[in-house]
Amino acid sequence: MSGSEQEEVQRWIEAVTGERFGQSPFGDTLKDGVILCRLVNKIKPGTIKDSLISTSRLAFKQMENIKAFLEAVRSLGLSRSDCFDT
Image 1 (cartoon, one colour):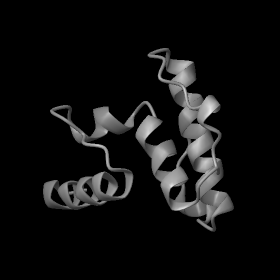
Image 2: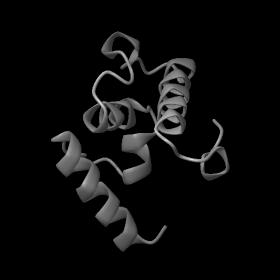
Image 3: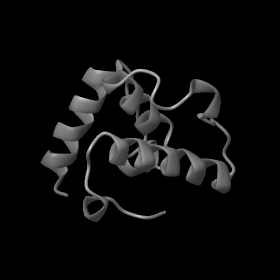
Image 4: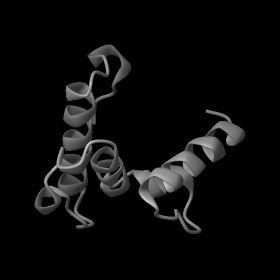
């Protein structure tokens, strides 16, 4: 993804969630899955229970967030072939 595409996606995510990325690089901001889970919940409230979104820095907790995000977007109609694996 080019820098301009990243900027466009970042602006969109910030607009939908109301959260700012801050100074961290694009990938670093998304890698824990927290903003991605919150994004899904803005699109369809309650898709991922807030109690299941972990802010832990432990890698396996971050992977659980990403897994929850991927399951959620698949349930919203995104094709499995358009998704990635952790």
